[in-house]
Length: 74
Image (tube, rainbow, N blue to C red; front, side, top):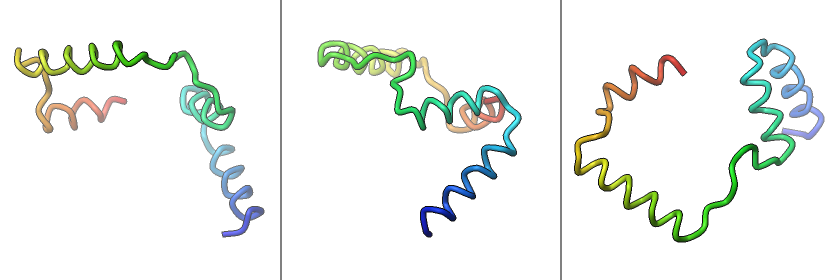
């Protein structure tokens, strides 16, 4: 696909979106912004993994069916 064709398709797709949240997300992606997130340090990353593992051990997770049902509301 040529650049001009892709640009036209992107313009058409964006023009058809009426959801403000989707438009803001696309804008952040196009802007190359990190958004409201800051990079994690290695210790924060390891802590997050440890916390996730503990949540799994404690049974604090969703099944695939529950996740699919919840994702319908996103």
